Image (cartoon, rainbow, N blue to C red; front, side):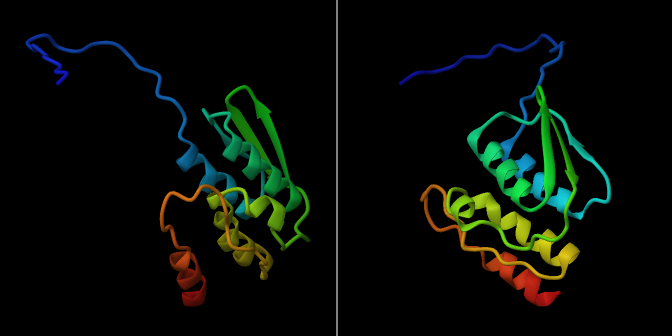
Length: 133
C-alpha cells in the first residue's frame, strides 16, 4: 500500500490559483436569465458542459461571449420560453434554466435533462420549488 508521510513544523507560504468550477458556473450561467444587464463570470473552465449551457442560453435569447477564462452573458431577447430538447438531452444542468425562465418570463417549457447516467439524480426538488412558488 502506498503511503504519504508529511513532516510538519514549517509554515506554509505562497499562493495557489484555484481552477474554475463547472458545477458552480453552470447554475450561475442559467441565473443570467434573471439579470437586467450584463453578467460577467470569471475563471470559467472551457468544458463541453459550459459550451452546451452557452448554446442553450443563446437559444433562449442570451448573448454569450468568452474572453479567455471569462464569460459575459446578457439577455437580448426575452421572447423564448422553450429550452431545446436536443440541447437539454445532452446535459443534466439544463434543468437550471427552469426557475429563471419561469420567474422572468412567466412561462417555461423544459424537457427532462439528459447527460451521463451515473446514478439517480432526480429533478423533483426543482419541480417542488416551482410548485411552492
